[in-house]
Amino acid sequence: MELRKSYFADQRTDDLHEIGQPRPRSDSPGHVTGKTAYFADRNFPGMLHLKMVRSPHHHARIRSIDTSEAQKHPGVVKILTAKDVPHNVYTILILIQIGPEDETVLADGKVRWKGEAVVAVLAETERAAQEAAAKVKVDYEVLPAVFDMEEALKPSAPVVNEYHGRNYYLYDSGECRKVRFGDVEAGFAGADHVLEQTYQSSPIEHAPTETTGCIVAPEGNDRFTCYTNTQAMFFTLDNASIILQMPGNRLHFVGGTVGGGFGGKVDVIVEPIAILGAKLTGRPVSFIYSREEEMQISSPRAAEKVVIKDGVMKDGRIVARKVTGYTDAGAYSRHSPYGAQKGAGHYPGPYTIPNVWIDTYCVYTNRTPSSAMRGFGVTIGDFALEVQMDKLARLIGMDPLEFRFINAYRDGDIKAHRQPTEGAALIECMQEASRAANWPVAEKFMAISSYAKGA
Amino acid sequence: MAKIPVQFMLNGAEKAEFIDSGTTLLNALRDKIGDTSPKGGCHQGTCGACSVIIDGELRLSCLTLAETCNGAAITTTSGLSQGGVLHPLQRAFLDAFATQCGFCTPGMLMAAKVLLDHTPDPSRDEVVEALSGNICRCTGYEPIIQAVLTAARSNSQNAA
Image 1 (cartoon, rainbow over the protein chains, first blue to last red):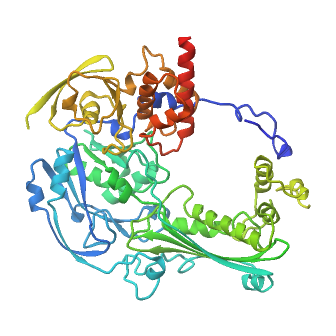
Image 2 (tube, rainbow over the protein chains, first blue to last red):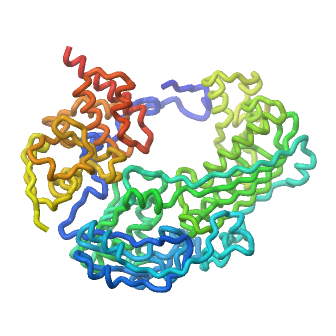
Image 3 (cartoon, rainbow over the protein chains, first blue to last red):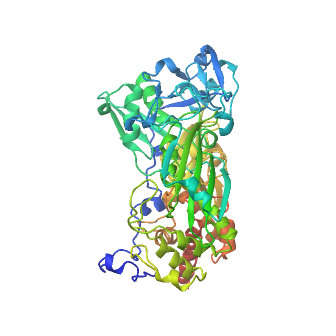
């Protein structure tokens, strides 16, 4: 590895002892010897297995639930429905005052996506739990469903989630997150070219090799130890405490190595119901997603739609950028209101543009609830922005890298959301990329810097 | 349900257990015998995390019934190091940063060991082919491939 010490030389001392040196990962010896303990590597005598009865419909009213046949299945110990959950309607971001509570732990009267949890079956073996779950009879009245964000935003669309009462998240700024900077219409009017493009993405599943799950052991002191592969330990503990109406000091969460997460293990889904099962039976409970559940049930990255309209001058300056972003939350909020908001702050991209207008919507549909995944709210936006940048460069006949140098943000520039830029290293990154990729740019671009004004 | 006795050698030690008929070798190893080094990633033979070596052959323990393993010699990742000394493959995985979350690592090591046992000096293509049944989702395939090639070289140097 080569360190280019010429960059930012005056901003740091030269005593780099660790950077550039290979250091062994502290967890590797456990990984290569099979000694690393993942949550599922615990086994307790008398452990019960939890399997979920899930909705086969995208949107339906539940007329009735009959668990009598399932109850008689050999090995079944306990069957849980909505009425067993102390605080059944929750939302995970309530911890940072982002409400309303809009999701049920177990469906109560209605299902809003195909795969939604309806009834939990606890049995002596995984097989018995699976077989008994198949014997639970749920009578559904199927309702019209909506899967497309534009359709969902039409007044005639079925309301997906009554806790919101409308198919979008209501921010304090209204129907969407808004950023207003300069005068975007005047910018378009004065531009040499205007280009509007639409970009869309599908949901993306993280597909970790280790599926989501937890094992809960009731302790003698009236506490519950929850071994889990959550990526959000205290976040999950606090939400479990709310759902179970149980003080946090009765919950002991044990995490550790996660077998791949990528953001897919930050939702609070398996732990509360498994702890409830352990509480009501007094026995250890294992709730581990099957591979099918991991692929179909766990939150994916949201589908997004991004409409970008740019005004650009022949000399390469972007003078106006208008972005409308749509995030498909699926049936419930989870982390999506936050993701859509993050997009609003991010959308101008790492470029200094004098006139910016941004609207980002968090939309509810009858699809699998989406949530966190690597840079959610930003990653798809970056894809759209950078494709747009290439198209703009082509439109004015300019080298795409030089076009980015012209518009790159620098320290001290005020961003559209009115925070000053600090620590921007985009120009230096592009200079290095230009060398590494052997993609030469004009000498003047190789002479400029992110933090020294001029040139 | 009547229990079935099974008996096999696991990493050189004799193991005997009573199991339910239909129990997979993966569940028998993990839940009954306490060797949790094979991992259950899919339980349907697609991810390779449960790979073990049975009588010298690479096998998916999630698709192998424990009752068919009577008298077999089984190797898992927990038996790879001898007397606290890491196997060359383990050493190479450490040195080459070939682990990230670690969940696929035991299966990868088993697949790589069978390859090197049969083909001590494999080509890169042979390594890729040998690991093709093992999924890594932290997408560290390249360091894993390099680690296997490095281990093969260190083996041949030791032999020379």
